[in-house]
Length: 367
Ligand SMILES: *Cc1c(COP(=O)(O)O)cnc(C)c1O
Image (cartoon, rainbow, N blue to C red; front, side, top):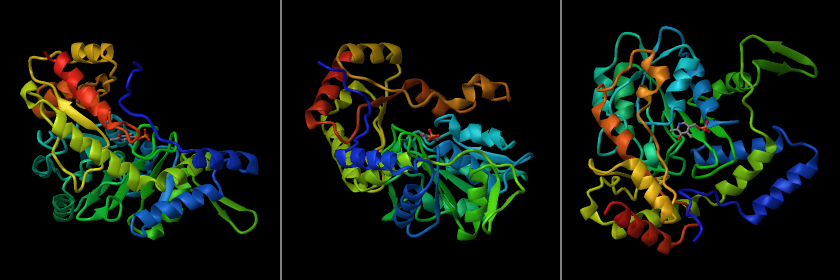
């Protein structure tokens, strides 16, 4: 039997035909497709200004720069995320300050974030791990009370909701990723939701070499920008994906429900929060019991035809961050979860009996 991947994008024939049209059109880098994709993203985000990027990482970095974060500033975030979350803080010359996660949600513990605020703390980067939103009411309250900017790392929560509204429709800066593994994809890509439409020109400058154009032939550069634009080829994929967002999210939720029904609780794994209102079920992750070897579990599952992912080891223990003073023992929940968490297969094209297969294999692998 073919290996069941832990994720796989669903690209339909209409999208493939649309990409072929873009390729034949004579305009393949940022152009009309990017504009149309940004407009569609804006409609999804309650009419807020959105700009497309070549990656979620670039969107996060520009969000920080537009928020004025730089040298001497501290930015509070979670150690349990993709390393991009903290790398962008280093990129803008600021200092990432980690606080532990809530072991139930696996997201940043906002009470600890509150306690970690210092006179030089300028911003928070919350991460919606696996697509389970951080409590936006508590987040907004904390940011307002402490006078902090927020750059939401919503790379995994596109299509998730808070109080019935899509993530991205409210808040300060919100960054999405459209990497191949995310809930909608452009191959590689991302987007930044702006808190104020007046920031759009500055955002566009930072996205492309700091260049501002005027009139027929005017050009000025007054700030150092990146090379972070999205191509029309990628944007056309995104437009095809966005049309199917509701369908994708509904299917992911249905598969997650099946996991809760089929999973053998006697195995002693920690299951995710059973949220069918807000979460977009970007991933279905379980934390293995203390006695289980994760490496053996992954190998055994592969023998049984099932691919398992690891998202993520606690990032403060990477050499890059250890060299900046972070050490083992500082964040016991993130460290324990980071050592024992596994991502089980979950993607829209998966069949119901695939979930049953995964649950049966896990029973065998943990026996
Ligand atoms: C994917 C991801 C990113 C980075 O997105 P890219 O598009 O790969 O640059 C950042 N943070 C989190 C939590 C992610 O999952």
